Amino acid sequence: MATLARQQHPLADSASQLRHYDEVTGIIPPFSSTLQKAGYDGLFAGRPEILQINVGKLCNQTCRHCHVDAGPDRREVMSRETMEQCLQFLDRSGMKTVDITGGAPELNPHYRWLVSECRQRGCRVMTRCNLTIITAHERFNDLPRFFAQHQVEVISSLPFYEASRTDRQRGTGVFDASIEALLLLNAEGYGKPDSGLQLHLVYNPVGAFLSAPQQMLEQQFKKELSNRYGIVFNNLYVINNLPISRFLHFLLQSGQYEEYMKKLVMAFNPATVPALMCRYTLSVSWEGFLYDCDFNQMLDLKITDQAGNARHISTVPAEALQERRIMVSQHCYGCTAGSGSSCGGQLVP
Amino acid sequence: MKTYYNPDDLARFADISQYDKALADKFFNWYNEVFAEGALSAREKSLIALAVAHALQCPYCIHAYTEDALAKGYSEEQMMEAVHVAAAIRGGASLVHATQMMNRINQLSIS
Ligand code: SF4
Ligand code: SF4
Image (cartoon, rainbow over all chains, first blue to last red; front, side, top):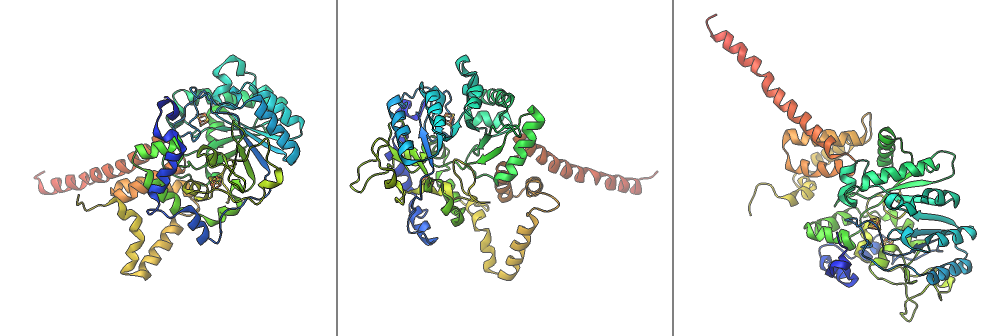
């Protein structure tokens, strides 16, 4: 499957995605007014704790729900120079947690260098690994060892413990390759009690429905993966699909866009608001621009200064990012539905 | 198109309280309690509900509990097996009555 960008599909353009949000205003209330009703006059950032670095849109997979529109045909990858600017930002901000994402971040030629530089600075490093990259080519086979040597936390998507539903979302053969990769990670000690090597799995519903509570699914995943394959992991992060890029495309194509948006609004949970990840995360794009989260990045809702100029990682003063107003739109309903959703899973019990 | 069943009516379920709020409140409270975690888990109850929905052939319940069972992490195979259980009980319930037919045949017939 080609990416939306490759197909030159209108939805490859973030402005056209935002126009779809305008279309449903009237059927569903603007997110900002729902926030206001819940007693929040906008959404404001606290002190940023996690720097989420998106090192590029290049990926060996083309998952149906991908909000990045990543794939093998994308060429946007972060340069070494921009990575250096990220490291300088870490130095001047004192932020101590880094979350590396993509695409498949390992396809960036400077990925391993970035990981080791972050670790040398004493940062906790999380990496979003799609699993199949580990077995995709022999030059990636040693990734589990590399992760372990650098004590990197591995966060990997596995939407179901059976092939049918996993492959439907992520592509034919992905399930089997993912199981193989999980076994390699386990062999390195990942997910094993007392190894100190954390392996978390990410669950996105395979379609236009919301997920059951994280704990319920985690129990199920642990039981099934252990019984069937002897695989162990630490936590399951349950994440809602946000109506962005290829998931928005799926919703529109299948005629379920309005219904899904209504579902998210019906499930709005004000208790999730204080815990929203944009309040303590900063997202940086392959070009070095700053965003409130990876979703805003894909919608090109940039963090700006008071004059409206886009903030760049090379020049932004760290203190300028605290207490900033977060850019919200209708996609934010995905983070506040039910028990809430973030890159670290559910937000409230 | 005019039909007896309208998919939008599922979201209007709570409107049944318009004509008798007291009884509707009792029903919804009881319903919510039935589906809470208990000696059976909320997850197990969802699969039972899906099977019963098929036995009753209620399109609203099938719509709602298919989604609920997917959300609660059941596989397609597990869901289909649950429907077969419902169908088997329905089929068996008809067939077991054949014994009544056979009794009546014996009663009416010259032996
Ligand atoms: S969801 Fe992840 S693995 Fe799938 S295409 Fe997007 S970036 Fe690649
Ligand atoms: S999409 Fe979610 S994380 Fe991003 S700004 Fe909206 S609420 Fe915050």
